[in-house]
Image (cartoon, rainbow, N blue to C red; front, top):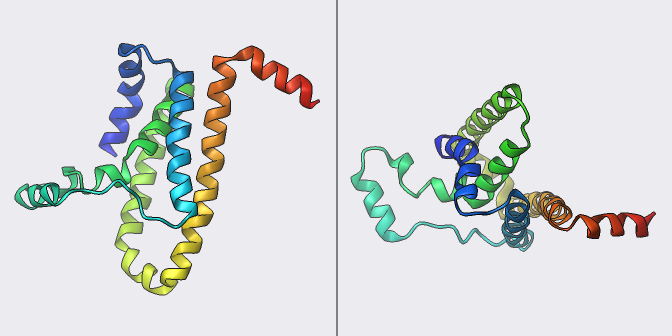
Length: 168
């Protein structure tokens, strides 16, 4: 949750520092999400894994949650992209506060899911996990298309208006 909260509140400033527009970030972020979705649709495991060196380092540290064992999987690029864009769209302190509550609620759900992962995976089996992964991959692909479409329409407004006029 800490990584996501930092991403939400500092992400846009980091983008500004590098001269990256939110629209460009939406397109790039949508492409990253689409790659993740394609892997899920093929029921492939994520390529965001930790190395043996990182695992050894994690064993030496007192707080394993800080080591890249959890960060790339739970608060990886796709999640950070989503949080930065959501914070950009928030127009008031209330909506920013709701985003914080969302992040904390999702962290709670992730905690429960990780606690129940063993029994749930035994109950679902390999086939059930693959089916679930593909369904969530399709949902993620839809979110990615939305990010890309919104980013492209912001980058190229004439293109978006021309497309809307042709489809009517």
